[in-house]
Image (cartoon, rainbow, N blue to C red; front, top):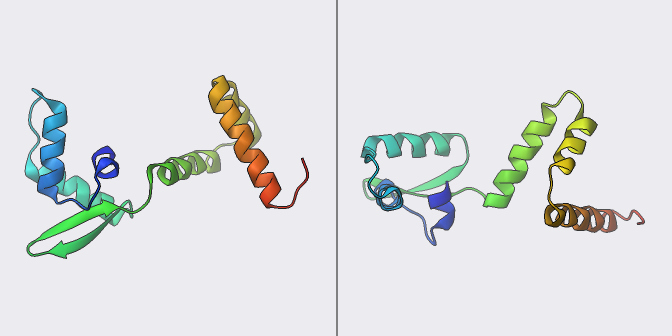
Length: 117
C-alpha cells in the first residue's frame, strides 16, 4: 500500500514490482505472481480499485492513507472490551504533538456538531 499511496497514478503489477524491488535493494527479489496475488487480494478487500488496460489491470488506492489508518483505529476500538480504557491507553502513549493534533480534531468535531467548548 505504501507504493500505491506514493504513486501519482494508477499502477500495474509490473510497476509495483519494480518499485518494491528498487526499495528492497539487494534483498531477495519477489516473484511477479506474489505481487499480483497480494494486489488481487487487496482489490477484493476493497483497499484497491482496478481498471482493465489491455491484458493487465491498473490499480489505485481506494482511499487515502489517513482514511485507511482511521478505519484500522475504528476496527480496533470496535473490538475493545472497554472502549474508554482503550482510548485512555492510546492517549497516554501519545507524544505532545500527537495529543495536540487530537485536541484540535476534537475541538473541530465539537464545533461542527454544534456542541460548545
